[in-house]
Length: 387
Image (cartoon, rainbow, N blue to C red):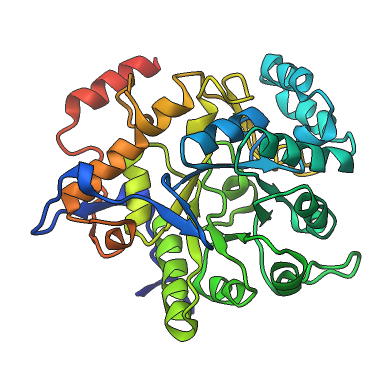
């Protein structure tokens, strides 16, 4: 319900992961007997966790490794992998840059033009190694890169912007017709992002896309919310977009996956995203901590390289383990950032949810004290560690 925030102005209260909790019901299930897989179009994935299309997270080798483990990793076609024949040299520069100079360096590095031959080459490299080839680019490049990637054998194509809509107004360039792109140009599943509202999700569903990314500005390395002041907390935005999906499915019989993108720091956040209605989640910073990630322990936002108004920053996340540890354990840290699949299975079992879709019906409560109640000694230790 909207509340008055001033004369003649009302605002709706929205919720993020730290403000809610999941309430156990009457039934519990052995975590080893829950079913965690999800489907994108006709393809089933054992792991409903996607590695984000960020240069510090995914390269060819990472995409192949993620595929072998049952998940999906998305390669950024607007990044260093398609600008440089040998991106490792550039990634070393970024990792070794002084914190004060990192944004300027990234801006400079990304001024090198994209080489169209590398778009096909990266897709072919992933496929040749037996990986699932998923790639992403901004709407302005989709009409050009989509057919190139498709001819090279891409399995999934993502059109991703800070905010996407079917009603983009532009006079200086031709806007991408999302319906034409999804239904006529591309013969593979297309995912569109990003959005945060029921209304926009409803319009995106009509394009023929196979999935929708939900989230504006929640990522650890993204500064969009601070720079532009826009965004909706992930619990509310996922619930609203999932509601649009369900109504669309009832009307058409076509199911489109909702993917919560960003803002999840640990297993509990991932579980809350599924309880909010997500079919899968997209994670960046957690995978940036892996030894296989190309960022060398650093992570930066997709809009960090913007030449005039960067909306991302390079952050040091360190290296805590392997991709396999992040997904399946064994966890060697206690912050919930490892063994995400184990956390999800245990949560589902405790909640009595047999499948991901069952998670959508989990009771959710408003509980802003969920992270602090009874945690006096944890809070004291954390304060001491920050000094």
